[in-house]
Length: 413
Image 1 (cartoon, helix red, strand yellow):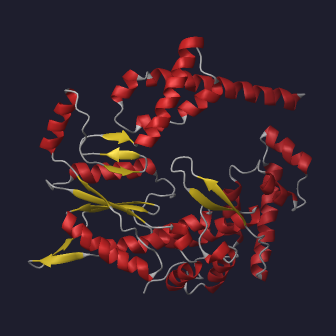
Image 2 (cartoon, one colour; image 1 turned 30 degrees about the vertical axis):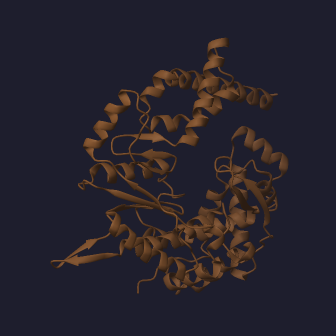
Image 3 (cartoon, helix red, strand yellow; image 1 turned 90 degrees about the vertical axis):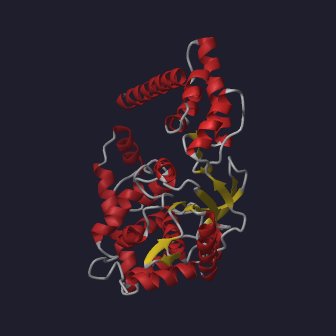
């Protein structure tokens, strides 16, 4: 059996690996107080010097402090004494789904250790994570996932194509640290220092499960899901000496998974995957979203009916904020409500005063991608979306230039 991250290739005490991870961890977080406090402990920079360097965009002293911090962390790993503080659990309601999420506040040192763990495990992640996984992976995301769904649906040669969307019940709270460590023992078992380090970092997780929003937890959950997806793709049958897979295509976004193919075959593949998932403590929900895509003729007839005033739509898969059909991609309904609300309010400001306030413009421009990557030509005309986005972009740009100019005057004075 092939193993990854062997000791000759990955040394968890390598200063270059630790430095790369620390620089990534501090990217975009230098103004956060918890990360600043950790940097001040190196005694290579003071609070006044740090504030002055951030205002002047001078990172020379900051980089020296980061290099010193890397040496401190290296010493802690060698002595096997990590300075991890307990996590602070709290709850937050999801703005879109209204679900109450159990989250944890991680300290800066814990986050740095998680970046180091991910940097060390990257060779295994590159080998194990599948091309069909799009959740929280660099250079992938919602847009690429939707484009993959469009490619599967619109290039399929099957006249009757079906899709089943499933998700894991309580995905992160159901993923036990012990189960993850058992899988890691199988794949990187030869690198004992790395196994100890990952176990020490995850030993701080409440209730012994992966935490929502954690950097290491996100990568490890995708790693676990890759085994579930392989169990789905392994299902098939032989006919005339040739293997035929039950699954024609698959797209996964975190714990949401959509499989494409013939309905009867998809049921067999999903049932097998459910059994495998149960063996590692994950439960795939029994309520599946089943979609039977319309044929080209049915799509044309539906388009003609809608031109005559019909509100009926053909079947589409609702995933990653979009609804994909044979011939078009639209925005998910609950997201479209928010987009429409911001467009109407921004147009009212633009019509009444001739300009959009910068705080409203920021809200409007945050939805630009939804309009750009969907078939929204009628929305562009009806809600003046292109005019609004141009005016909003100019308003945000003016505000940023004024803010930067004020900071420069303050620094000069």
